[in-house]
Image (cartoon, rainbow, N blue to C red; front, top):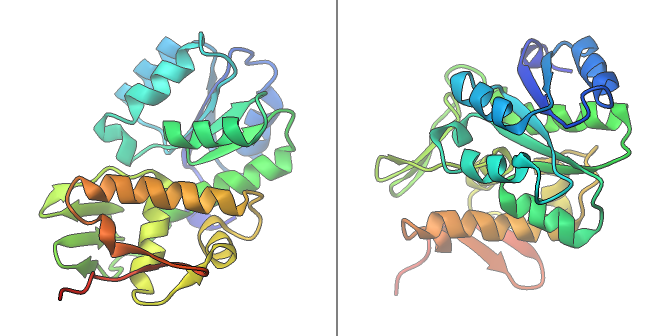
Length: 236
């Protein structure tokens, strides 16, 4: 694990705190500062008072407060700061896609490997590890500042999830180059991630939808039969 990842704060929200105690301990051994809370409302207050770097949240049933918490969190400015991983007993592509559409950066089904979760935590937090003085990326009035992990369009902040930020950053760094889904999985999600190519399509569509509010959806282009690239649209 990179040294800059150590001491980052993680909040685990799970109805059964005892069940996630091994995970809390393993993340602590990896150098993170970890708390576990069983009540969704208390967790929401904790996030509002002092946003952690990462929220690991249980999502098993619509009745649990975590569903509302996820939706509310993604509407606030804290969404730009807090990364999110969903833990769930619900498996299958539909549930994973729904979880990602709710705003999660990753989705892990129970039971899980502690080693795998730690690896995925490091991948999700990777976008925070930016060297001071990193070069600002811009195209027209779309600006990505790696030093602060901020994206603005016409000077207005755009709230992105961690994976959406990393995807946009990678494509902007390599502006004009086309990457297939496998390449994007390896370069953006990390070689240790077990997500499939469908996840790339889902996140590209989410990123386009966010950018469409400012008229920049056409900057993420599909190259038929191959993949995706970032490029300013040509005018006729």
